[in-house]
Image (cartoon, rainbow, N blue to C red; front, side, top):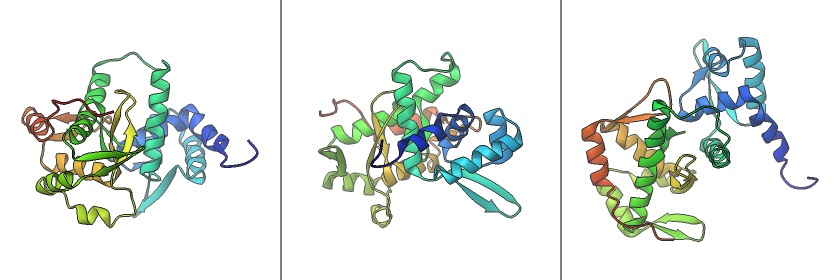
Length: 232
């Protein structure tokens, strides 16, 4: 490719197994140390430092210092969306690294995708918002309707604050396990934060899985009923 963006560099960065493991580990939005990431990647600390430097130079991760400690996070939600899309592409073509197990089932039901809800319940939330007329489609983009503004304001979402952000309010993110869209953007992040703040679900410390409590899942399904097919 002589002209346009150079995708080969990004592909090479993500294509290394150790670096792919590092990026996947950061998909839950948490900041992790080089030591933690070296253990996850299965490489020595010095090797992990080299990988981290390459990922940082490529614009995929960024360092954050707190006192004497240095942490790493994904560079932004667009990186999370890129990794999730690649996971979908790999899963669709059967490129899986392990057989499904209990943890895999939990991840498929509900997980964090950088800072928003993914998995079966994430797709359910997106489909509910669309089928009830709270989100509409304009070509490939999605937007919030007047009814949607009223619904979300009533649910406690501060839309005025979200619109002050440079980040898109609504964004579609292809779900690797469901092969359908879930909601990203600042609205997706705010809805996920609401779910956690209400105590409906908690994050799994060892994975990206999100565990809903029985009452929390009941409340979630009541707020986001899904009894109609998504248009299109």
